[in-house]
Length: 341
Image (cartoon, rainbow, N blue to C red):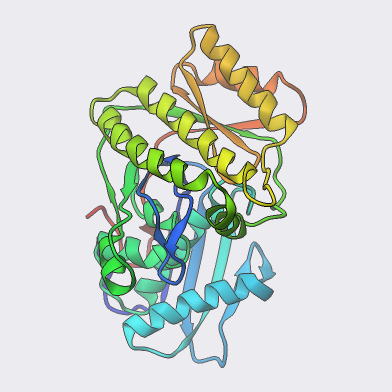
């Protein structure tokens, strides 16, 4: 994908992705280089829309969902804009306005859509000419999983090799096809509030203290290879089986951190039990869970309504949204268009 010369202002739309083989752990925290490769599916719900306007003001102004960003949220976006400015050889500040359609910080990949949209809009506003690989590398510096939301469909994020510049160049995302698959992902929301422990903090604590982290990382690399083969042959049942075991293994590493970190709630476990019961009844349904309490259920499009109804029948504590395969990051009308590379 490419962007054009500087427009001074650009608006981008991006969607979250849900990792079916998880990213959990950095080998280089400065460059956001992961320990293992990961594989995801971009969704068509919970979009983020971000406008970046280059200004002559004295400081970056950042608004999120109608409220001025402060503290760590402001700092994180400002640091990302500094990366964009450094690559573009420019110094002007920017006004950033972001609207997120889904819950933020609740394990529903809001940072993935957020930084994919920010990277796409900021690169265009500051005049960078980036192809898809370079744009995914840029988005990675804001949030690792954002590298995958640059693209639609099934996407891999290569861990790459080495640290520093060599690691940066080799760690990028790319789409891998799987167009013949048409799954649904029933998102079971049991808690929309922000997590008390951020994904970044939980990831760092897990990699540093869990005795089970390294074995999980080694098994996850095998899951990644097996998942790529399952996507290539269009085997949704195998995709679901690998995704569920990979996610549960990731949560096991958090539980065995010292002290343990538990995102799963009793409501999360109730959804997991319902998924298992659906499978026992012959429904192709498998769960995956990011760093949060909310469960996503992979199933066929034909079974999505039954899966959603079963989950919602558990009680008022859960609501569902059904997602399908979504597109990559795009620039909205009146700015340069972004297409698949």
